[in-house]
Image (cartoon, helix red, strand yellow):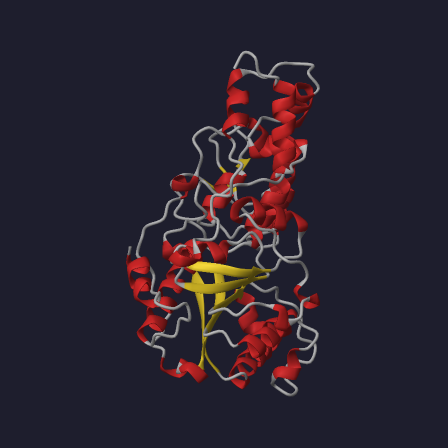
Length: 401
């Protein structure tokens, strides 16, 4: 490529991808100050080394997970509070066709578009439920917003002013055959259990059978101690009470942190002396108080890590990788965070590392969703309550493939 105008090629590609210099440098896994390297190449001040230019050339421009052809789809879904599409990814694996998605965060929208080829609609509170397309399954990893009136009337009106109400009004209007909702484990005990009862009673009032369970990522082959509550429902007007659904049982797959670690990791992910000294100081302080708070070290032989959170970008304290004696530990890379949530390696990360940490910390563990989706679809298929014509016969083949 000796005749290539490197400056124009790099700049044009970055613009097509709609990335900042920092985002593109992080997406390409360039070393520290990679954005400055890119700038110098785009300005024609320097010529990129072959290794770096090869990474730029090979970075994908097409979304790796577009909707399947409608003729090949088995059911229709909507993806609410979509984040970066982890729940959609699991259901799409079994032939799900997304007819609508919603996510308000602009950086999550960017990651969603890069991977699925579509930008989600914005704030769901501003979208009329009548404008949402018909669908078979509603998916939502909704935020745990406070229920100020929880426990008073114990019904549909009790959820007004919360984001759960937006799910409820869409279910009421569109009546999907089923839904899957995901939230933090603490939802179960929120407000002394009143909040989850308001949710359960609201869904019963809408005439859906409801199943609620807490599942752990480590039980499904993912080396992370992450517990989340899942709420599954089926439309009683379509024999929902007869759907033979059960939550999946632990897979029995042994987990190991080493399975998600990258082989070559840049020094920029190693925490500084100052940060490490602060971690050590705080840990010692907590130890003297008699509690176990503080940073947590893991290595490749650890069975699993702590739960990764949206604040991981700040100091990485909940999951640090031990690099051996005399060396400061390091944070996980964004790709390792993706793997820790069960995302495939061809899932694109088109945002800065800081945003990527937030996004994966806020996301779902994909293999857990896949296990739930499989049980939901097999149970629904037995009653033939999927609406895409002539496709229900394919679901068992998709799920068991």
